[in-house]
Image (cartoon, rainbow, N blue to C red; front, side):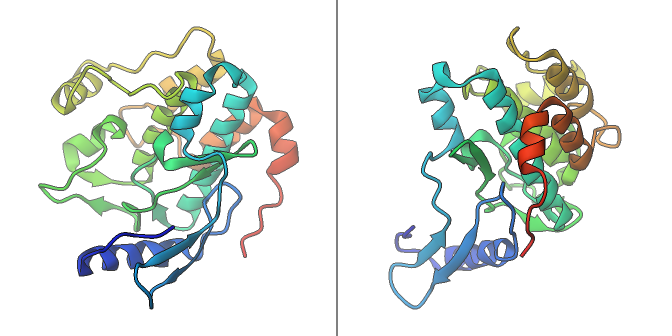
Length: 240
């Protein structure tokens, strides 16, 4: 991909993202190949995923996507997030718009907000994707791996609602009020698998981040629901 004219600060941000992505090697994480920094415009070399953004795919192909394919998408996302966390990275922007999908394979993408850290402290004026934000982030302004897990639950909801906007009629203050103080959780369609809904609503969307399932346990639970996908794809995933 080519970038437009960029400020020095934007170039520094881009290079920071490139350094973070460079060592990541996983079937469910977008592959970064390099940056051509000696020419104008700056060129970023990334893996090509023919299907494009997941949110667009869900909207345009909604009638052609089976329940099992949706489940496999969610398992792919769980594997990708687990791997990113194993590498010490908090993604901080897990959402359908930031996943790419092609050849029946979902890849986690867009590491622009990501950091290699145990905890990320947000600045007072720093923006974040409020519709995917975990309750504790509203209260503490801190991101940990557990916040990515919450966002994974929102991603799963997107997958089963054909890319709908979470809390569509609410703004940030209403979202905060309802998920923290009213214990509101997004409703899944009736046809969503009950085991999946139970995992997301009762384990992934736990209000207490210490009680929330970690990404590895979420992936193990998803594997049980997608046995054929697990057998074909789980092992091995080369890390080099």
